[in-house]
Image (cartoon, rainbow, N blue to C red; front, side):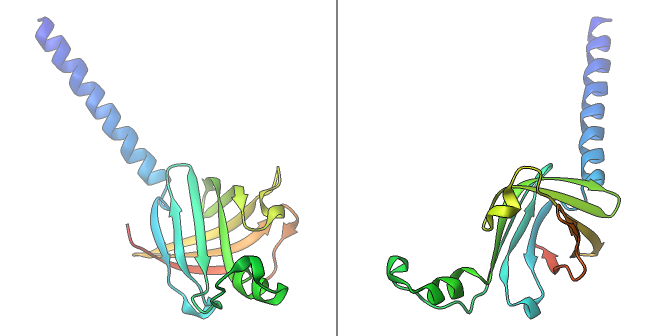
Length: 152
């Protein structure tokens, strides 16, 4: 009798744990690693979405080679760091929109307390399209559009 009760509790627990994982994956279609796929924006990089946190890193492969950044001119530094995106933080999904809340970013204003960006997303097969719609300052009329390919 005790063995049957233990088995029933164990099976129920395993099923509930499995159902929780399935629900999490269904609620987070972004989870995984996505590679920047649209060469028109001149960037190479990865966007990684975990359960509740993300990291976005992209840079132009055509940046100048600067041997010693401490001796670079202002123009060389701009050419090196301007064609780049870098931020990481937490995110939440509501419908077809993802709101990111950076905790670290290349651009300081992006990571200030209360800062956020909202992207509309669409997934077709292994392709993710992110279109920026608004940020903490208001609507974004011509927001960035990222096309990414799932790699994991």
